[in-house]
Image 1 (cartoon, rainbow, N blue to C red):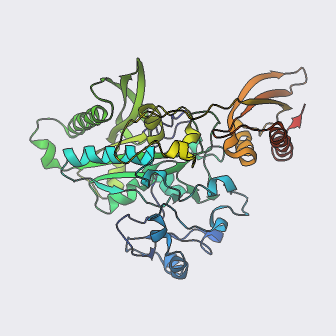
Image 2: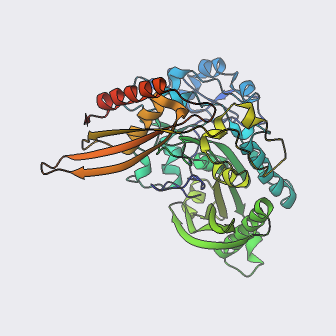
Image 3: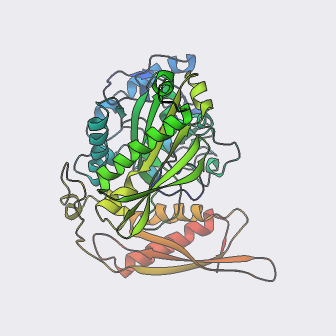
Length: 446
């Protein structure tokens, strides 16, 4: 639950966003929810089991019917969403083809995949310790409103996470969720008091072995009524915080065994007090998750005036890389049987055995930057050209000359996880990257 901060680790959930359109895992009902504004509403509405309909949603009923196969597609791990619904000719759209291709793959719903294995292990903990009280949602639509993504969870209007540099915008009012918390407010309004939300989330970011523009998060929420804390002699906030820590310490032991733990005070816009849980694992302190007592304003807006609640969020890739000893986040997306065959349903923590180690190829690129240049935009272009063949993009040098012009030099590492790359294809990739960078980023190559 390291949520919506510029330096947010993939191990923590940027925990709050509420879905414009939600389709529950146990539901086959297709009812239009919120239709997108302007050009969005003409082509795309995601199905939801909720019954309340806006007038604009009613006008989009035919679109919902057209997309009704979404629910059945989810059963085989895919969501059928038209490319034109996500990658649009809109001045505010910054979703590339490579991101659209990941929509609906839902690694967290694959029982023999490390992400799915970890998700199920966490489910088992909550089922065993809370008598199946927690309702589980793992197929909520990743396309959400900016209101749900930010406003409903008290993210300030000037927060850096709202920028086009950090978030994938479909249009000015619609984004690909940055965290599973996008669904929290809606689920609270629907009367849920104990729930877990797991899903794929999207964020523009740097390129290295631990960062990827698509990853998976889980968040949990528990709501308490006055009768639950009044008999304890504690105030509501203290009661919720103590219950939260007890729950998450148990979860950490369930996943990692008898490890040393410590709590660190921190800040999130949507919880107060807020904490991070760290464990001492493999001779170092590891940040496991973020959490806290939910801000009363969020509960108030959802109709829970006399309640208190806790919430936590964690990044599944971060924990899976540690538990399964997976060295590169790109491997989670590999279909190579030498990777996929190593994991089995229910087998948490099977250690990954490297099947190859092909050498990297490094290419440097220098250019004079403009005022609008950002590293995230550079990484988007490199990913768009090279896909998962790019391993890392690293700034290795920068300087400003006497005229006030600033130069950056980036080293790009190309490496396939599955085969050796040829000089010809690497040179072609680098040539294409240079062309795209010069034409799209308003820089001057050196």
